[in-house]
Structures are given as structure tokens and as C-alpha cells.
Length: 213
Image (cartoon, rainbow, N blue to C red; front, top):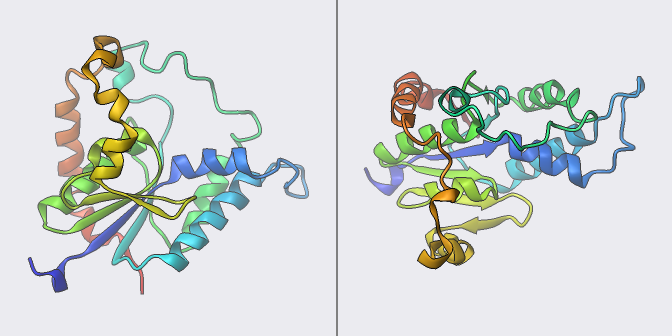
């Protein structure tokens, strides 16, 4: 595929956007009925800036559908120590999705899967087509996807993250003396079948991510 025909897909980590916005914007921003909207405001501001800054062929905003995924079926202690979302954030989850749709962007979420799974699926499909995928996030978990045809963009710093940047950030983790089996979550076994399912389900959807004019 020539450079002229190569497409660029921006995959926005919507779930990451929500939490970053919630912890950045003061809680005093609320609706008339008292519902907090600080995360919605911050999310919308970040999305508006992204759309103004980037030159992408296609874009989608990807969310976690819920906190329960197939990994919990494989390993019941998966993320068992993670705190529940703050009470003030919960009513903002649907509002943030409405905000993304108001920008004319597709909201992608699949019950039983994390946003990371869906982002990885789209990135793999784009790479296989000879296209480019840019993951809009600073989440270290997503850095493992960076490689040929796949980069990241830190939305707060507006800074690209390529393979060299990932190696620099994670150099300590790559030290064999610092790595041990406890870093590997026990649910790794069996994930291949679920990834294959996502690939089949989303192979055609890649063509329908919203173009940016």
C-alpha cells in the first residue's frame, strides 16, 4: 500500500479520558440539579482539542462497557483490589458517552471486554491492512501495542509515543532482575480465543469509523 492510500485511525481511550478529566477538573462544575459534570466538561475539552489538532482519516472513542470482563471468568481475583469508581463519577459515565456522540463520533464498547481489548483489536486490524493506528492515551498497559504501524499520543502533553519512547519509559520493567512471575496476571491463559472473537466481530467495523473532514 502506498503512502497516498494509507489511512490513519485514531483510537481514543475514552475510559482513560474520563478518569483523567475527573481528577483534573474541580468538582464544583455541576448541572442545575446538582449532578457533577466535571468529568464531562474535561472530557469534552480534551476531545475538542484533539479534533482541532489531529489530521486523521478515521476516529472512534472506545470505552469499558463495565468492570466485569471475560478475565473475571478465568480468574475471579482479576483486579479484585481495584477501588470502585467514585460516587461523583458514576452518573457522568452515560453523559460522557452522550458528549462523544454529540461530536459525531462513534462510541465503541463491547460487553465482557475492556477498552484496551477493543483498541488492541482495531490496532491489529489497521496494521494488517498496512494502515496506521494512533492510540490516544498515556496508559502504560497500551504501550505494549506500539510497534510497526502503531504509535500512541499523550493527549495532555500532545506528545507522540513511539517504540523508543516506550523502551525509555519501561526500561526498569525490562530489567530481568526486576521482573518476576507476580507481574503476570493469572488470567493470561485463554485470552487468545477472546481476541480471535473480537477480530472477527470488528473486522468489518474498521471501515465505518468516522472520517474527519
